[in-house]
Length: 426
Image (cartoon, rainbow, N blue to C red; front, side, top):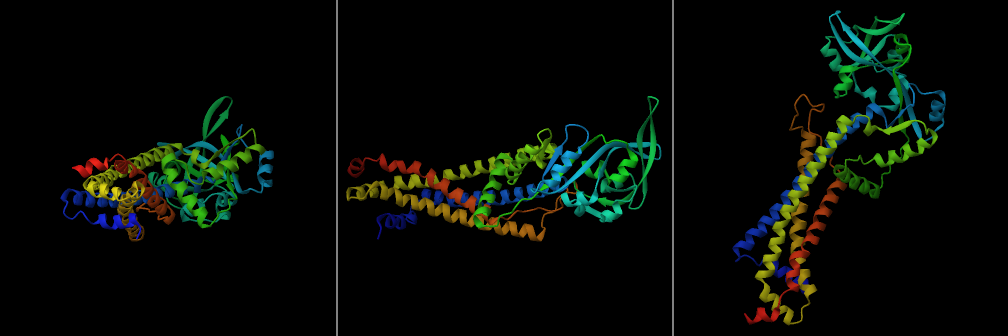
């Protein structure tokens, strides 16, 4: 039998008469289990919440947005987008501020957005956000027909099919006056973001042109042709990038978009092209900071729990120093002795992290499918979302065990510094 394995099997459970070492053994196992469980479940919850927010934001803006160097996109830009095979769809949108007039007493600033609904629905997932009314672009393309947010209707006591008035500026002989324009609610959407649900009115280009002579500003939303790989190696890579995304704040698909945007800039050098993550920095940046800090705190908890297993290995070596000295005198190599204690630490880490990650996966599965925890109404999601990616769990499991093996080389140095002759004399 291999000497390292013999010593490992002999010493693993040989602390029954050593009260302190037995307690540290149990504490180190529990700490590894608890830290792995917390790390896996917390990362799954953060990824689920992050995915939900990013999915909703991306669904409203496409993969990237072209910002023209002037107020509107010219025909050469549109021709370039149509001929580019890497672009799956694009939507040219026009924006103009307006004032919502209610009973000539209350006035609210809003933004009128003119779109081609066929292109807008194909580029974004806005059609899925419509909760009431028609989702047909033929119906929404009618003159004076609009789509408004749910909170817009609640604040102004409006419902589907009702009309509302906007005030549009009119300049006559250098004097500014306001002209009233009646619009109708043809659809009600709910995105979960107040900027959209309260102050955004979306209409057809035909309706937009009937309200304003010229857009205040415009942009083009783009949806790229992105080939999704499905091999296990690609899934493992994406799982690793998901975890890195929590640390760095980068969306795991952003590197692909950045590359495609760089290539597109070669065709449109005078225009600014930004990925969808830069469209709403007020939402993205706090989320990045919050998730990065939570991840670092969880890692600190894990490193503190690692001290338990290091203490156990050190005390185990000290308590067995006479046995180690005898084995070394009989010809055992230091490397074999180190390997045996490394196997003890690895067993504790492997079983604790395996049990912790398994329990975290089961807990996440229960939370995901049974909706046990409901969030307050001020959240745009009503239940806890969990991203149960097996590759993420595998990466966390492998990372924890690798850190345990590397860290255990510190107490194992004690064997090299032992004076075996002095130990045997005493």
